[in-house]
Amino acid sequence: MSSSFCSPVVAGLVPYVPGEQPNIDKLVKLNTNENPYPPSPWVVSAITEAARHGLQFYPDPESSALRQAIAAHLGLAAPQVFLGNGSDEVLAHAFFAFFQHGCPLLMPDISYSFYQVYCRLYSIAVQTVALADGLRLQVADYACAPDLSVAGVVLANPNAPTGIGLPLADIEALLQMHPQRVVLVDEAYVDFGGQSAIGLIAAYPNLLVVHTLSKSRSLAGLRIGYACGQPPLIEALERVKNSFNSYPLDRLAIAGGIAAFADQAYFEQTRNAVMSSREGLALALEDLGFVVLPSQANFLFAQHPAHDAAALAADLRALGVLVRHFKLARIAQYLRISVGTPTQCDRLVQVLQALLQAGA
Ligand SMILES: *Cc1c(COP(=O)(O)O)cnc(C)c1O
Image (cartoon, rainbow, N blue to C red; front, side, top):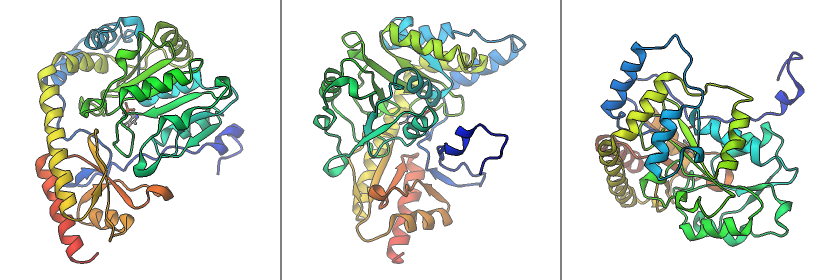
């Protein structure tokens, strides 16, 4: 319970609970969708270099050099890119900027759980839309007239924690359904095989696409995320950011981020390795009797018809393998398993095999 020192709103907050980051040796950590590979060596050199010069000075409040690098990488102009301290911060600013209209924000019932946390924080009403059979999103379910009776739409594509991707035509249908509201597409996992909506930005003033360097660029520890959209949306995000923190990205993050986009070969190599491990792991899990949803992300969402997911997660943990389990009723029988290195995936399969045989 919050003390009498707190603003009343504090008692009503429902904070996000991240996957655990235990300090245990030799743990096979497949619970938070981090990249199993370290970042490009170019990133480490750039950060080391940046640490030698200028830490006594504030960083560039606009992170202009990184912004330019990202814009060039995506074929956009710098005024179409907004940077933040991880995409979670970018998302928070976007919710504040675009969804406080006094009517509900539409989102899938099964999605990234931080979205509901921001809605609490900013008193945004939520209307969840149930995913259809097979935990697939059906865009027709998001049609509701008149447009101004909803605050907007937010979804992850590929979705979390299902890993299922939506085709671009579906994103376009959503944008056309709600032309007066922002449709926020969180593409945290898009580099692992999804279709990006970046190419739709020129045609749709209501589209905001959010990316992170935490997953496909192996930089969860550096905290860099960004949003892309037409300049009026980006300017709105700048107003919010400059009313909150002038310097969300520090000098090391800016330097490391630029280097991450420079080393395209390393990016291709590591994401291809993750995607290839994903396919192998899916087959191995199916051999063990799991039903695995088709994933376009760096994780698998899998269910075993004969074994309780929470019990499996606990047993795996006791044997040094961490996976994620969500208590939410509709997905309580699923495990979300981040794709690791081939060695980590083999270890998981080995331990699972032993557990299933023991009749756990
Ligand atoms: C991991 C994740 C994020 C957060 O990324 P950060 O940039 O590390 O804050 C945002 N959205 C989804 C769907 C994610 O899975």
